[in-house]
Image 1: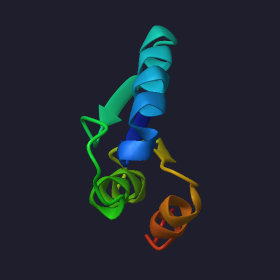
Image 2 (image 1 turned 60 degrees about the horizontal axis):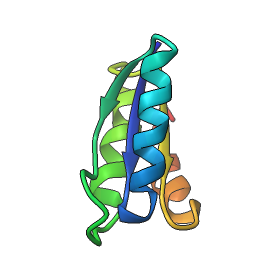
Image 3 (image 1 turned 90 degrees about the vertical axis):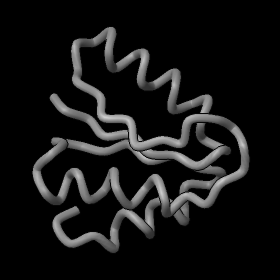
Length: 81
């Protein structure tokens, strides 16, 4: 299964652990970032992960952040998610 990942700085370390686990389980991972725990805004990374599901590039997406609320709202704004 192809799984897209996207997170802000608050979810970065969790994203990296999840990415490692998904690889170990044999999934293909598309990582849309972020690439560090330096403060960033989540839409820059969550939107592309959600769009990857909507356009068929990924089967599923996992998005992470400080609370998950904004990330969920951003992803759910994409038609097809």
